[in-house]
Length: 441
Image (cartoon, rainbow, N blue to C red; front, side, top):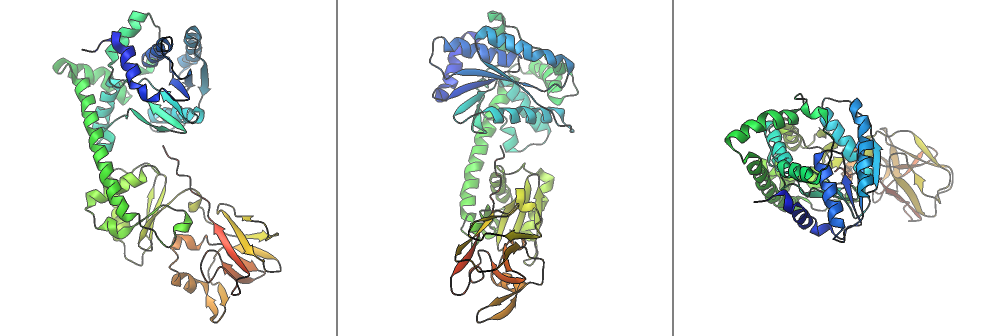
């Protein structure tokens, strides 16, 4: 049976894969869990060669008593010889203070974490069990019920939770044996917070009937994690069939062929898309997946859009496209091109260059408003809308295509073969769209 006496050995085993990291940063709230983790690591560093240790305390300022916590953390770290960084954050108002505080805290961690560094947090087995039950009561699926992973990427580094197989009782016993002092957050007694209610009112009752409730629930979370891994494998197989190259890959946008997705069962469609979207946006709940059904089943000549928290999914040219960031901004106006020998930066739209010998006269870049006409060798004057239809340009791209003008004459449309250059090949208009920010964690 595990005990607090073998905690150092178990912790070192959990962290064996991270011994070559550039640094170990401890998320130090001053509470029981992080205090024990910090003390254990300092003790191990006296007999083991470990990466440099330092601590980060995030000060939310949500309650007056919390103003004393940074000083407590400084005192503890000074006694242990560990550098401490105190970061003050502003918690955004919203329906869930817990969620807003967590987002602010992890935002601070991301900002401080460098490449090949590891952030260590003190979540333990009871936290894992509480998370599983909390998410179960919220109707979460397998992904949500797999609860907290032992490790995951965080910013430029990694987040590691090495105490997930350790109970709160073991941490308490270790702290008592070592004579440690820690902060007791008074908000932990506020039953308006769901997790506090589960911890103090629900789990004690469960433990009376099932003493190993926390351990078995944590084990169920591990089973769910394994099931999610299998679903992720299936998603990768299905997405490989849909990740075929397209005519507009040069846009730099993430897209999937629609036909292979349609061939899947509805459940596999949702699984594949959830996997694909997870790095780009918060995933929709069950009720909002009807947006995917509407986009998938819309008429061929429709231009359906599924709006999600982090962006939009569009359908065009037999593909689904993810748009976010500046791709959702509307463009208009004229950008004068004073020196065509130099690349022209376009606000919210990347940049254009003129390769070859630029045409003489004042040049500018504009965007489509409707009614434009372009003169083509051997074809005469043609309506731009018809030319874009011939090229099967997706609707969401048409308003962003840079149009090169000489005075009031439309000379070229960037990146479209036959429309992007002078007939004699003396110059060509090349557009590099700006990349999207896909860094959601």
